[in-house]
Image (cartoon, rainbow over all chains, first blue to last red; front, side, top):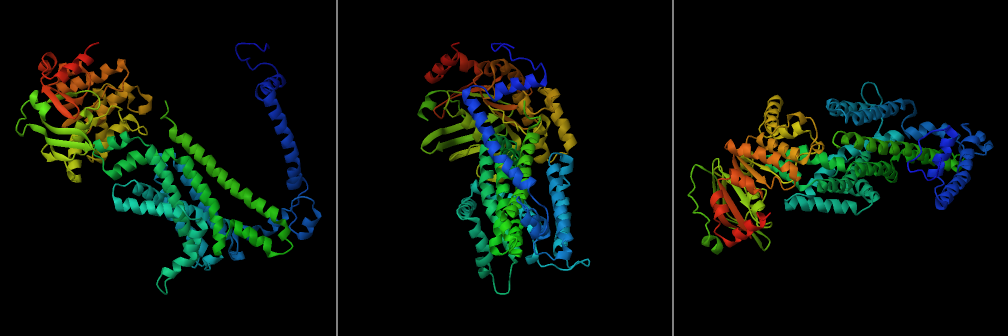
Length: 367
Length: 261
């Protein structure tokens, strides 16, 4: 094949010759790219083998401290031995099937809702699913009825707690953020001012502060005898915090919808709320899918901060397990690697779903 | 209105039952900029009015005040006997009877053509979906685009989109239609298909106010032509008189500029 051929050569020849052609074009295209390719290969060869050796080849699953001491690689035995503590925290050991079931149910509802978004006929099922599902989850977690023993929510922990805090956080922060975004654009000065002040104040402080306020200061303002549960306070803190960020994301979307769309709605005599719901928001929200999911991923990871007010989320239970026996403490790398892998899996799924949703919603509208 | 009085503004007829729009000494400012100055105008039922003038003369702003897309600071506008002021109920009542076709179509890109058309009848007129669909198909056939009903606006040409926009307005079965430079954003070969639809509408007796530079359209269907400049109505006359015997120098200059090719 001539180098000067006008047309790109057709993919002919054996696999080997095609592979050579491909790599010439994509990997060794000029001296600079050749250096980059060789450099990258060298870097990966330096990086990958030791990790594989540590994490797989020399690793052990043996759930005893002795077994781990013998291995030269990773001690996954730490995770193996403490799995139930890491997953469910201090939830009573014999009742841990309940948070497991609740977690599976919650994941089912979430996946069901996300899948249904694409199909208008299934969208009607989303709200009933949550209305029925959430009480069942609550009964499973708290118990106290149907012969289930009562479990105070200060014993909740681990992955179910993380998932509950974040999904309830999304469900309430989304509409609240939307109202704040609309409020910020309102022509009514009082509503506008309240929205702007709220957004700017909450955005201006760290989540830890909001959680501390919710945990320590908020009860001081309540009349004597009235107490709000610690978990609920943390949940409210997360919702209030996330809503402020979402509000700014949504405002970006609202501003990106052309003025003509508002005018068309007005000239057809649609009311403000009709215009918003039918014309503006469907377009605005679609535009901001990537930053919205970004906020949710952020929030999901931020739920780990509830540990500072004494709740043991998934990362907190890993720490708990590390401290459960001084002999395990030195295997913190394995513990955090496991937590990181689970967090990554969930966050990456969210990112993938957002990409899928964007693609699905644009189908048919593109020319 | 020193300039306007020395030209033929035409004596403002007293408001009567026949007048569907009455504009009375209306003024509008953007900050210090006096966009509309002492506008007096009445439009009879079934009348076709073409508004022209150089860009920035306030012609679009004028027709946009008639469905309250623009506010005004003094004077009054009555549409179909309803005072168009700050009262939200009145604004909604007027908008049910007055529809606007925009320069950039402003179709809803996330809905099919059919959904664009049935939206307002279903939500504003509370029409059952089936009936709204029949109505929409009827008007889509009238603008000769029924076969595109299930496509999205982005899949249509500019001329087709503008015809859909006209059909969308017609689905509200309005008493008055406002056209804000409906052909200005179109490629030249698509102007005719939109004007044809507008001519048909005019011949059926729709009350129309149309901001346009299509002087052929003005000659063919207009009952009156209004020439605006610098926020004032400079000249208002029947099309023959307007084109053959303009009174004001500004009108003459404008006509010589746009008719010179």
